[in-house]
Image (cartoon, rainbow, N blue to C red; front, side, top):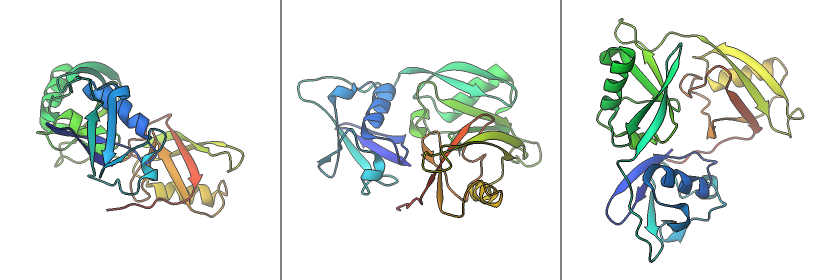
Length: 250
């Protein structure tokens, strides 16, 4: 989900996962905007967020919640919006690293990719953590893109800019210690398959007993109705499964 980090003079948005701890979010703010973790105070409605707790421990924090960032008294660190960062571009057959500014827009990133890979900008489709970067005017930091982020680039077909065609993806399902003694299960499915399809496959093969399950990919809870492609699942990725259900607010 996306939350708004607000300072006395401006604000910015970042993507956070339900299971991300407050200290992990502070580290992300330091990496992206240059405020050392030790000098950050994050509050919501006047309540200070505790480093060891995660977003699930704060039901008040939902999509779009404003979190106030203050700097501890006596310190004068400024937020750096022009920080150079290195990101990884992943193409279907190769990958490359490039340097960008966090204030670069999606459009300017597409222009750089056009120069590097000779992909026509109009046929370019970019994804980050399963989300399509479809607003050219938005800055990269508004999507939560930071140092070493991985951007997946596809070439749209000429037939009315269709999404990339379906393909098989091989990944690993890792159960928790409470399930099957932490089994490691290799799976191959079409990338348009949903997480619910994956659940039914594992249950149908009697790999998992009939129950409610949560799947985690790159520290994010996966949505039952969304596809593997939507979540950015690639060959060799690990999906972690736990018993339970996710409650979503907003």
